[in-house]
Amino acid sequence: MKRIAATALALACIMATPVRAALKPGDTAPIFTAPAALDGKDYTFSLAEALKTGPVVLYFFPKAFTTGCTAEAHEFAEAADQFKALGATLIGMSADDIGTLHKFSTQACSGKFPVAADPDLKVIKAYDSALIRVGSVGIADRISYVIGPDGKIVYAFSDRSPEKHVENTMAAVKALQKK
Image (cartoon, rainbow, N blue to C red; front, side, top):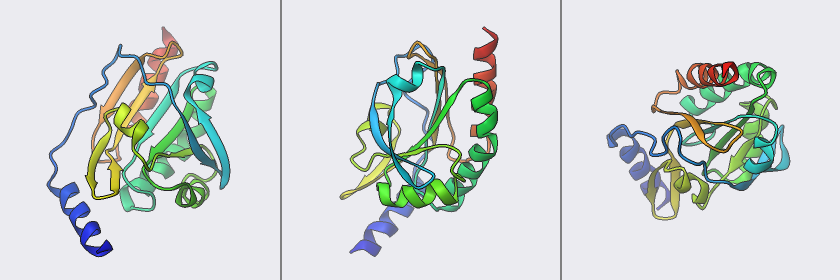
């Protein structure tokens, strides 16, 4: 049964057409708290608290330890110090369970930034980042947002390829800092 669900999930991902982030610049970002892992340790991420210190880069990814998601996490980890120097908080989010994200935060994220668990897809749906749901299994689409300290979406980028998410969100944070 699990193999059938996994196969259906993979086929749906392959056959799905590209989506665009539904939240647009100027929209109010949904406020949330979520269980997260930072370097393998439990952490509760609060968007409201993070916004008090500056912009937030919130990126959704489909599945921990898959090729694209691992590559994207490595790239965000390499850029984490730059985001921090610009005053931005970085957080990744997926529908994975917190146990999986404990390992992912250490191995793929190098302990540089937290990743949050949203297995019920509440936050993922609020940001219109749900890709598919097969039975009780759901995954997020690959969408990155930059949220300004005022709680408004400054930038949204949706592309299933992980290649431009770090570059584009970094440029958006830099542009925000220039204002």
